[in-house]
Length: 167
Image (cartoon, rainbow, N blue to C red; front, side):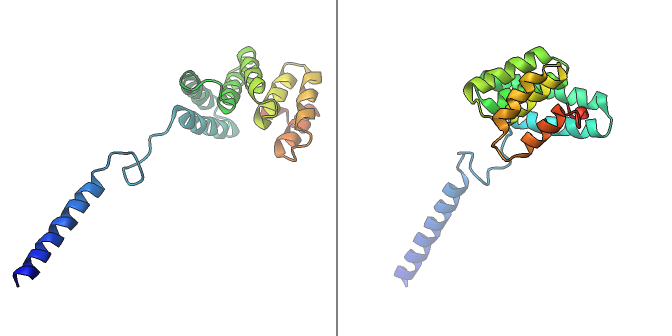
């Protein structure tokens, strides 16, 4: 009988201590609540919102979202520089805000790291169309030629004057 009580107490202590240690982790893993989004992730969300606002004709709201996204992307780029995706969106938001000079600068920085980045090549091509440098836009199209991607088709249509409203 004493042996049975001792085993029950020992088992109870073991289970109690395991449940405390399992729940006390502060490693940031699953179950610790929602993951904090990075500045880059927040910016991408704002860019998507801005695109929706543009489609609805809400230019002021789109502009505001692009401005907020740009600030977050600049922070992200300062913290983790030379990420082609970040540079792509820095170029995109700059271009959408009418700053073609900085947009081109960011795109070219991204291409220096990854010359075949699909998004950068498409968006830089769109910037070249918007700034009347069609020959350079065609060069970006040539880079995308073998990608079998919608970005190639989109840029080709923009160069042909079919989708001017996109940029």
